[in-house]
Image 1: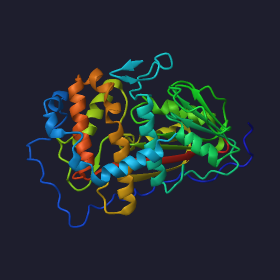
Image 2 (image 1 turned 120 degrees about the horizontal axis):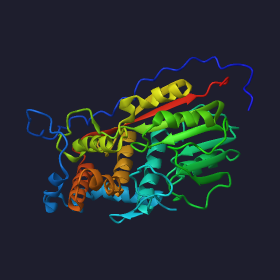
Image 3 (image 1 turned 120 degrees about the vertical axis):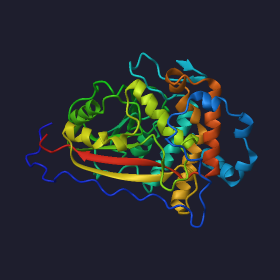
Length: 374
């Protein structure tokens, strides 16, 4: 496609101030802190969790069900209409020579669907923040997962051709006529022609891509001049702003676990903190780069109504399939046994439901534009 004669004049945007995190409930005292150690706890072994008394971490503790359990059941029922390892299914090795750790079975896709609704709520019902025109012709969803974002985007833009790519063909077959799913490894050279897409969307590929600069270069090549890319991703580590998260809690260990795994497989699990997103997009050639942080509770501990609801959705998503995060990488690289995984998951579910730890996840939204003269 020939480039328009007039060059884009907008300077590269500067990042916006992060969205402030939710305040702790007024008048609520923090739980008794863990005993102070001379040094940080660091990464606990899988055996630490395996040695725990399962009865002390009853995953079906009726005292934790009450309103939260009935609320999450309602959320799940409304949202979820619609190589085997450790009892879970994963992508075919014939699709990619990379190491993607997430299951592709129905349980994993159900979790992704709940997560999709969480992020849509966080964006006040929007699927994107880029300044898209209503007459865009082609859009790409990289790592589409269950395909729900691509389907909703196709409904909103009925004249736009929407393609969702993934290494697993686990998307539904009943989709809008303008939506198509293809099996493709985004970490390799893309099969699409140059200057084709008006919009490229990437969301929650934490810890799945070794070479982000190479992926952004492929996105730049396939985006038409003036088109936009938007990448939404999160830190794996959990953020606590009020000191209620002991280092040796399941929440406190979550980030250390993924940092250790990342060291083994060569991937970054804290994308916002690393700065990879902004730097990689700039190096690929994109301009008008803007970023925004969202600090969202992982359970419904906040007194702010919207944040409390987001926390409830996060609780529903994560407690639905904590094992899906752990079942491949933990035994393979950290030598965890089945009991270690079961006990850690039970401990994490208890922390989600109790809400004593005011845990948050930090999301970063980065959008950028391909120059008109590129």
